[in-house]
Length: 92
Image (cartoon, rainbow, N blue to C red; front, side, top):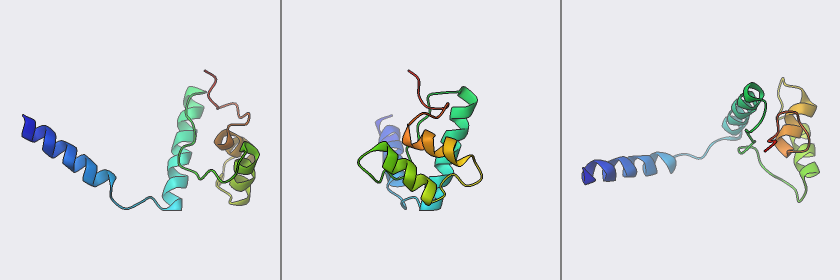
C-alpha cells in the first residue's frame, strides 16, 4: 500500500513539474475560471493571468491592453481578473 501511495505521489510530482504553461494556455485556463464564475455567479477568481502592477487598476489596464478578454466583454472580464467590481467576483 505504501508503494502505491509513493508511486502515485511521485507521478503527480513529475506531472506537476512538467512544462510550464504558455501564455495562451494561461488565458485558456482563465477563461475556464471565468465561465465557472458566471455559472455559479461568484467564487471563482482569476489565478492564471499575470499580476503586473502594485494596484488592481494596473492588472485591469494590462488585461485590456493585452486583450486577455478575447471575445468576452472587455470591461467585465478584466474587472473580474483584477477583482475590481465584476458581477462575477467573490462575494463571500
